[in-house]
Image 1 (cartoon, rainbow, N blue to C red):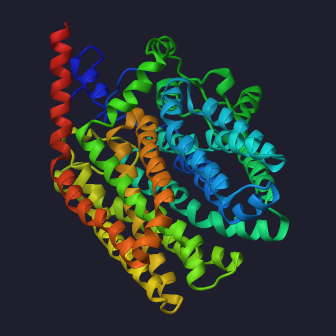
Image 2: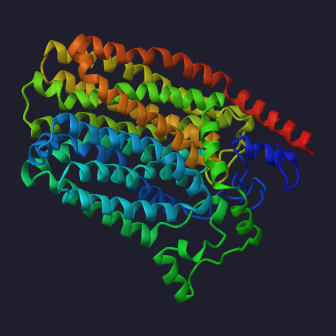
Image 3: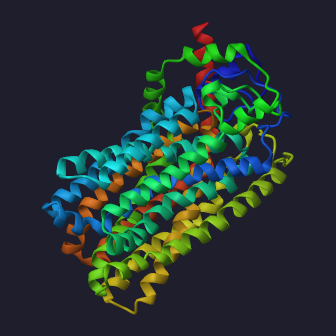
Length: 517
């Protein structure tokens, strides 16, 4: 569908959050350009570096949540607290982790990715330094919430950065890279936390996080450019001076920096849309048919994954009489499955994208963004994800019965690797699809996903122990596997109807725009 500066089609596409041609944004950026224009001026290697840098920061949110778990008993003993009190610090972390990105996402879509990264990084470092010296329960509770406030928006920002620089042809690969932190963090956190707590003491957990976060923040300051398309378009518009990297400042002083194209109207349009309207738009987005089904399904499935990682640290360790260090090592098979899933998901989505392009008669070009209003992008993603989703459901149930039966340790370890593989591939397909259909507001879309997952994680962490006590491991994880059987047909439904829903939404918004005139 052709889009021009004055046509209602542009407004409809932007307002409906469907994929837009290169150069146009939902936040008032530069006007749209022909589709033969490259989506980003960054070279392939530069884009890989940008995405890897974003993925590195996104690792801190789930990692910080889980690295804390092996030290809970030591913390309770040192600060003279009950386990219930320490558990409350986990809940406050998760609740903050779920809610705060809903506010940071719109701010990053308006004021840029770099300011959001820098502010969050400073908050995270300060909170960890405070936690390392926390003298009492009040400090622990407040600083854990502050720690979450600094780390949780990075997952949202990571998804937004991918949408800024990558086309739909590239997004499968990049989403695979950045999907690793979501699954790898909860699996690797207890391993590191157990080793550090047992050998150096629980306070060193937070000093380790401080050091890692400091290195990450330094890399961002030096190298991560502003990518928000509302501010810099495809990278050819000069970012505001405070949003430039140290590398860009040095290049400009040497006279070797980029030759930017200024768009004066871009600065004005950026400030016209109230931030509060963007925040409220987050919640409205959750009620869109396709988005709601994708986010709701992802949240249901994450409950089982959270239940497994939680039970590994407690019931699994008790069943096999494992030490804290050995318990942490039991997460490694899941880590291996996660990494394998990340390696496989990208090439598989790219292969299916090429296949659908051939079927639709659309030229395949990684550097240019096609109009997705008439392209079955849902089929590209979900044809890959659904088989792995079904496999994960069976594996979740099998893991519970294997642990309850106390079969050889190799069996539940192998099954957990299958869970990590399946969940990683499916999560990456959903992640990529959300960025495809909400490219202009990828920050808000990923914030919505983060909200649901966080709330479900908090609820699952609270009920998993009583459920296992009442039902046993086998039946508890059978119940947790039921949503997988429900979500599989839901994903088929989305795959069959998603493109039509997006077209209908555009027509509705076009009608509203015409009636307003």
